[in-house]
Length: 549
Image (cartoon, rainbow, N blue to C red):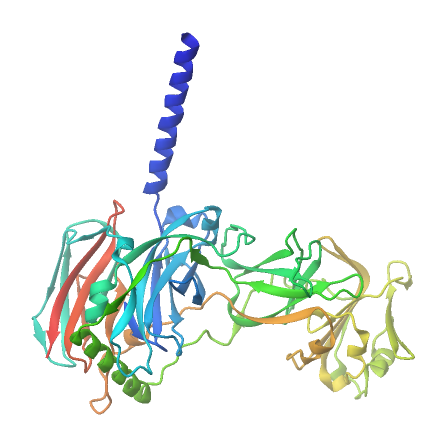
């Protein structure tokens, strides 16, 4: 009997522990996504703000924001590092995107450790700018609405009047009777359709690729891919080298896993750049490298239905599309990921260490090819061409003899294995040549000397002549930008002002309880909203509608 009682008590304790754990998981703080609009025209820019609570930042401070369709088709995504608990950036809505309902989701990479990720997604209605008239649209059924937003959460919101003229100044006063963690104020023209269907949706999401690890992205981001053969069979145990042409050049390596997968972490890499990935083969094996997209997809099928639009809804969309065309004529703003790249070097010297010496060919007479350069300028380097078979040998200063194997050869920081790529280089093509006449160790790799040639031309067009090498253009961490309407107040009376968003910013706790903004030439209803999270983790939203005549 005593044994049965003990077993029963143990069962009760385990059950209570599991219930408590489950409740704690539900109460955990979650990142919160805010967007500047619920509708847009294809080709527009969607701005976002993501609040990342302190409790989540221990699992990474880099936020991934994605725009996707209900059929799991990823449309666009960006990577943004949070500062002071906020990640703020933008996503370009493709100009060719068809009319429909899409969704915006934010997550951190470490959330991949869950087989089922319940995340709120925000609806975004997109109207193709070439549509003449939109009469119906596919909308997700209402069962997936996430109705956890509390209205009028102890906040008073007042405007200086109820009706305005176009381009009027609006003054908004608000008074908080609650404590909040964050709050965003937004003012935008009202789309009758978006007002009806644009709510938070809660989908169960899953990792797009289980091979991507739930790595904690702290001040950087993960690049993943696979090594496959010509039949797309995964190739395990293959050495994959990542190179970035920079000063000093970036170099890293990874041994592919059981499924041919590899992963690299780029710390504090901002902007846009080209990366070079190589699969190193011991023989003449032909390998291919596939870069994997890092995103979440909906776990189960979403049920949608066709919604026939009312006259007012359809008319508003038509006027919006026409206004968008006119607006682009007078204000052709097209924000893109900046075409620059910044990444602090891991060391103050190249990854191969301080060279034995550096040669600057421009300081010498012009030499016609690399054979002459090696003879005249590269002490301790032996360059030999025997019937088209080119070999490069280097003196080992430690033993005062030649290394038995060839040195690591680099061109713009990228390892090369075809010595003929050096042949036609003239001294006027070369910025510098680093010579390292010692054995160098990088991780598990050993190099019997280094010959590093940096060219003035960084296009790396020579890569077409080397096998198993692939170049990818990647968007790194998105740099900080200002929303276009946050910089505008009044426009020239002769220039159309067709802005749909008038104000969108985070309110600080100690800031004044008043804001001002200017309306555009658009008439209709304008919604002013305050949306945020209380100190008790309650999401609140307060709105007021004014009329522009």
